[in-house]
Image (cartoon, rainbow, N blue to C red):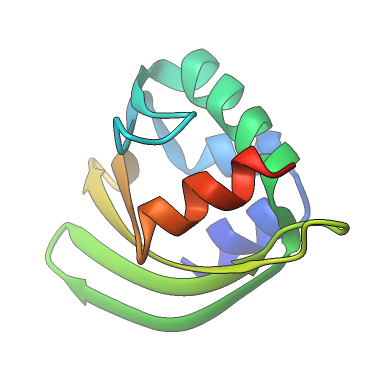
Length: 121
């Protein structure tokens, strides 16, 4: 997981997707501006681009990693770029299939605050 997040912090999409199943799915909360289900590397990549504009991914700091079978949960903090400057805590559930990332489901600590902060930009 640390290698996957290192690729995210470095905005290294090619390396990130080398860890992903071709049919990878990202499920974002429907209440968010980027909400929805993104299927496959191309759609997932578009969502990543939107998220990269909202956050300074280089600030991503992993707090906890917990694994059980094919599921890994990562708790982290990431900050937005200035001038809006806010911090958000996230727990992401990663599901693996055949040794590759098959599903990612982020859970934001406070989606209402996140929506407000993003709308202030």
